[in-house]
Image (cartoon, rainbow, N blue to C red; front, side):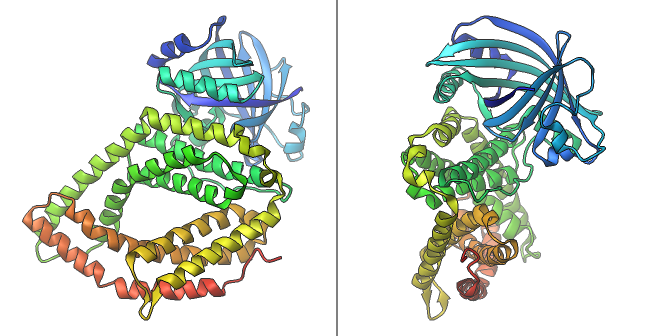
Length: 490
């Protein structure tokens, strides 16, 4: 079974737009095929747990067994022709992934009509495939409309250059889920998006640049995942996940900044995206943390009017975020960010090629130092005072948290978890104080009736009374963080 490295970009695309994609593509001979792929795993999902997928595909009577390892842009691929309907466990590394005596069985299948063209573009040979079909698992199905670009040979930068050209001709939304991942989601009874992000596994031998790529890819995948959900069915959780993905990416840029160059365009795009989400996030936070749990007020009519106005504003803000992630600017940001991660000149720098462990120690130490320094700057006789100073402290705590979560796999598990609990606790309290600070201008920006304005004032006064307690708690949690064991000390 020959081994190859599959380098592929995947986009979701409406069937109605695929003719425009083909028209914009470089010339080549088209081939249309009906593909039926049956995916296999053990009853205990041993292949899925190992990050592998096993497929037997029938194409015009020819059957091929394919084992793929890994996820994202580059995956190891082991492929071989077979004669029967079932996979051969003796082929390639498959036997090493299976427990002794394990039984492989079909778990879902994929049926697509593929229109395929191999093109020459910017000194590269690229396979363009347009797939329309469905994934089926039992009674559940999920439609497929995808454009795939697979690099056969030549520079990877050509793959992104072609993606940009095609995306200008038709809306192509970057996707990280493979057909196998969609099938696995159907098996679990989940939708195609908003599944939890797993822990990033970083080996001690990884370079600084390799670690950044792993963290940034995961953040970008989370953004793509949330954007797909918003385009399909806008919801508050999708806005939250989109925003967190962008913040994790920005946090990675801070943590790995000495290794990076040329990130200005990506950073500007992430700031734009974050600002596009701010109003929706603040309205959701007020509705879910202030209005919804509040006891009945003296003017129930005003509370009902406030709720109705707020819900209308939330829907409008969410539609604004959906328009953002449906825009050409967002598509360009996603392609440009991934291109910079995978092909940017920064990868050749000395820091990017350096071993990760010593760099990680230093980065975590510096992030904690920044948190404690900003904590001292924000403290007065009453504790952590001043909205602006607390906001700067909150951002530093969030950056520390994202860095510690990303790098914790290099260290002992229990000390890292104890440290992270303290960081998260501080960040949560600072987040509540930030919500208090933004609530009043948020309500002032809504066209509230007199009764609704009275109800909003009543709620704001109740929440404002909590500020001294929250400031005291944040001060206490900051002290505890300062005394916490530095899990990166070796």
